[in-house]
Structure formats: C-alpha cells, structure tokens
Length: 371
Image 1 (cartoon, rainbow, N blue to C red):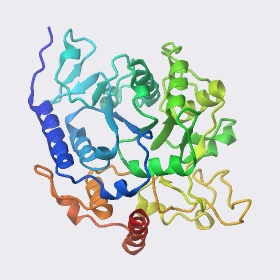
Image 2: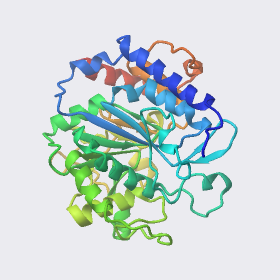
Image 3: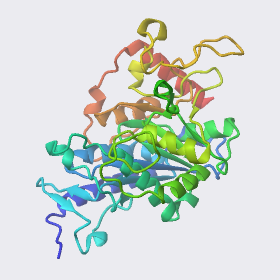
C-alpha cells in the first residue's frame, strides 16, 4: 500500500495554481489579445513535457503565471517517476493508489513510459534523454482521452520556451489554415536533409492541427515497445532523444505531411530557437552556414528580399530560457504584470543582452499588437 511521504511539495504546487487563478480573476490577462480578431474556434492546447520534482517548481509556477495563462488549455505531461522534497523517487506505476494521488489538475502522468527520466540523475544510461517516447505517448494520451476534440490547435512546447498564444491564433487566421486539414508547423530546420531525412520543426515549439493530432495518434497507437532500437530512420518507438526527427519522419511517411515554416509576410522568423536578445544578432553572412542556416533559402524567389531574419512583429515563441525568472521579465516587458504573492521579484534586476536592439524590437512588438 503506497503512502505519499510528504504533502508539502504538492501543497506548493496547489498554492502556485491558486496564485495564477487569482491573477486571472483580477483581470490581469492580456488586454492586447482581446483586440486581435481571434475566433472562438481557434482554441490552443498547450502540452508541456515536464519533470515533476522540486527543482522544477519555479518553471511550473513561472509558466502558469506568464504565457501559460493565455493558453485555452495548459497541461504538463510528466513521467511516472516523481521526486519528493526529500530527494526520494516515487514510481507511480507501482503504487496501488497512484492514480488517486492529489496531483494538480493541469498535470498528466504518462504512466506507460518505459524509459523514465530519473536515470539521467545518475547517468546510469549512455542515453537517458528519452524524450521521443514521452512525446509520442503524450500525443496518444490526448487523443485516447478525447482531448483532441477540445481544441483546434495544439503545441508541444518546451518548458524553457516563452509562447505567444494570441499570435499563434493570428497566424493561423492570417494564413487561412483549417484545423481539419493536416498542418505541422514551427521553426523549420533543414540540416537533416543532408542525411536524407525530412526537414524538421525545432522542438522548442511544435504545432499540430487537430487533424494532425488524430492522424499522428493513429500511427502511435500501433507502436510496440522497442527496447534496443535507437534508430531515427524508421517511424517507430526508439530509445532516443531525437523526437523532432522522428516526428517529422512519421508525419511524412504515413500522412504525407511536410514541416511548414512559420514566417511572416516579409519572410522573417516568428520563432526564435534561442533567447530573443541573441537571435536578433544572428547573421548568415557573418556566421556562415552552420546547422541553423543549412539548406534554408537565402532570398524570396518573388521579391528577392533576404529571408529568415529575426524576427517578425508578431512573434510566436522564444526559446532557451533555462532560468524561468526570464518569463516574468518577458511578460512584464511586453504586457506588464503585477507582483505575485510568494514569487521572487529578482527578475526585475535582470538585464537584456544587447539592450538597445532588444528594446527596439520589443517596441515594435508592442506597437504592432496595439495597432
């Protein structure tokens, strides 16, 4: 009989949820989003692969208190191994009453994972980042539990990415995209073509239409556990962290879906795969053809304008914020936010790299979104 050793950890989680709920009730949601022509049938489901452990709590709180509150649905998909305040691993798969534990409502336990995260702590395995299994099982969970009908658009978003849900909705509207058609989009990377693999969407923010979620789930439902397989050249379960490559491979092989690049009308990037203050200074001529630029077109074939510059005025996501305090900084910079009870305000002292250019870009975003 399993007994949870401490309630303190999950009380902190629930406290964080109450803070976020209070913020929503107080009317602090993004006012700018209300001005955008967003239809009710373009709901966004935000799926965050996550590790449930004390060291992850600041990220959980920051996501809920910043960009996460603007998703129509926000859920954190966690391994069946959790870590308590005293450093003990708890395997929910072995507990008779594990499914009855008081977990936050926005936490989903992916019980059937064969390769949970805790091996990474001691480096017991050469390859312990088995994110592929977690991702495909999470997509399958969404469909198996009827949640693929709860929204029109879905994103697998990394916990160190900052998301603009209202700009996602604007993007699909501006591009006349239907959730009932296959769509798979984000920041398209093409260096994989050199290995005769399809282009991928960078894992920092991967967007599916509802039709794609259902189609992908049908593929994943046929998977069998492959204990020794580490290949990224066949659509199947594998012992690998290459979830981006296998996602692209499965969608292309079985559904004929190609990765689409989220660019604005000028051909500028809408998703930065590094912190925005760094991405603004990436220059193809200066940097040379490293993997980020590999095989991307340099100019628009119609206008001749240079493309893939960072970044457009309605960004969709910024990636690479390992310190979650930056989420509060971004939220305050672009929308303004009040102090939150129980949340450190040390982010107020944070400084942007390349301050002048970063501030100019933020001014452009605010101007565009307030127009």
